[in-house]
Length: 171
Image (cartoon, rainbow, N blue to C red; front, top):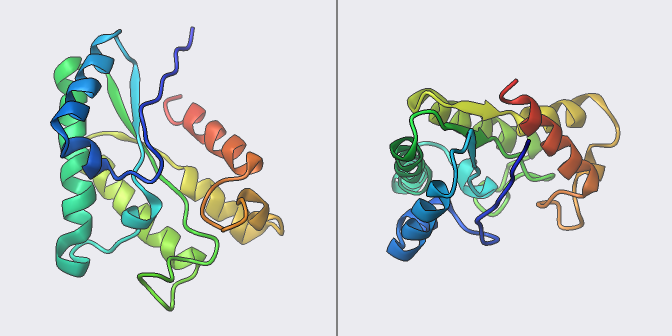
C-alpha cells in the first residue's frame, strides 16, 4: 500500500517552509496524519546548486539550515520515518543567472555535492534524480527531451525518470 501526499508551492525554497510559523504548523499536522515511512524533501534547483559559502553563505542559509529544521521535524514526529532528499537536476544550460560561465554539468556537480552534504549531515538518503539525468545528458542524445521549454522544469520523460529514482531510493 502506498500513500502519497504533497505540500508545496511552485518556486518555493525549503527556507520558505521553515520561516513561516503557519506553514510549520501545517507540516506538523500533515506529519501526524499517519506513520509515514518516508518524507521527501526537494530544494529549488537554483539554490541547491549554489556553492557553500557563496554570496555570504547562501546555501547554508537557504538550504542547509532549513533542511536541518525539516529533518528534525520529521524525526521528532517519528523516529521510524526516513527523510529522503530529492537530488534535483541542473538546468539544461546551467544557472547562467548566477554563474555566467555555467553549463549543465557544472550546475549538476554543485547540486550533487550539496545533496550529498545534506544526506551525510543528517544521516538521510538521497534519491539521485540528478545523477540519473546526468547519465542521460552525458551518454545519450535525448537529454534535452527531459525538459519542458525554458530548460528548467521536467517534461513527461523527466518526471518519469525522477519517479523511477525516487522509487528505488529506499529499496
